[in-house]
Image (cartoon, rainbow over all chains, first blue to last red):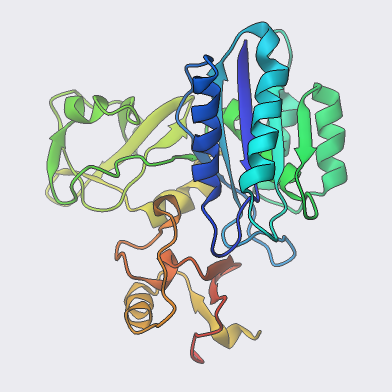
Length: 250
Length: 64
């Protein structure tokens, strides 16, 4: 069984981040003997004054493999972990989907895309969840986190949204790497020219000019780069990657 | 809070200067950093992204 798991709204201003909690859940799943699990992706959702996010309104999602009868165990494990570590004042939500390749997830993906552009409600989320027979649960507070949790699963299924958590954190800024070197990192599957969207040859040199991130693009972990005025390929700053996300990935 | 307490996006230098001199600056988790400069209001745990910029949850921004 392939499963998708997403959490949202688990933190407050002083707690550990939602991404860290997602990784903790992933570790517990692996300790249970399940897996492997993919890297966690961070999905930016709509920024609006009327949405009760802590500071940036993003959800954290991953998928993994597990035996067909493991779904209840995974849900229970994740729910208990959220109940234990979610911060005071947070509004956590959990979404777990047992993926069925015979199903159509268009509505779920559309929910994710809409959650990046407009205000959605818990009723919207629960209606969408019912149509897809997935697990969606609140874990304290207002439970508003179910909206982002469901959206995160939709966006991960969509495959063209989200930054890879922890990507390039050990790469050295101002250093050059070949595409082949970068592709040895688990968070880099492809290095694409931003303009052409074409993959670069393994021997191409890329200079890490900034705190860049790989993103989920067409279901792959992609590092987008572009040529500077000297025709040297360089990475794209994170602030620009986030702006691209509003128009480009979706 | 009025918009005069909102730092617009991409005011990188200003955000760095404010954060260096801020007694409450605390870096957010790495995946939430936005600025290249580590010490920057855009990377602070206590900033909140709003429509066109960020607000300081410690209410320490000056009038802009």
